[in-house]
Image 1 (tube, helix red, strand yellow):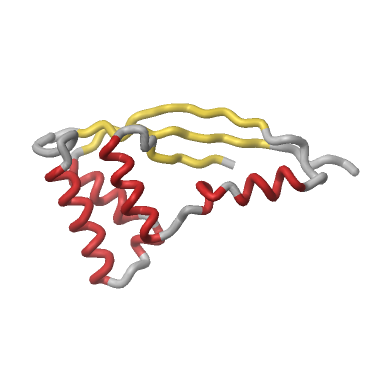
Image 2 (image 1 turned 120 degrees about the horizontal axis):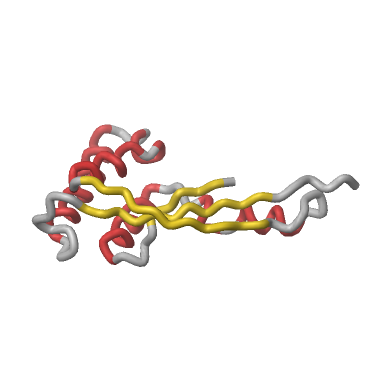
Length: 119
């Protein structure tokens, strides 16, 4: 299993996360998937690795990235527009992003693997 998550240790990225969580897609963050695997005797213990990387984009690229998430893209037109406008406001007003032509959006990739046990 692989998850690519924005690294919310950066303040403006944490603010993006707050917007995202209002609309859903918190499956990874709840940890329920992991609890289910840990409770099962069908799989070996999870092994995990974590990798950091950055995405370079302009403020409108951040808007488009958020708008393209499936649970946001599926919103009705008014809600979809509201999310885009909120992200644009964040990009225009946050001290770390205001007036910047290029931004570095930090990510982390969390990779997990296990194997099915032969019982």
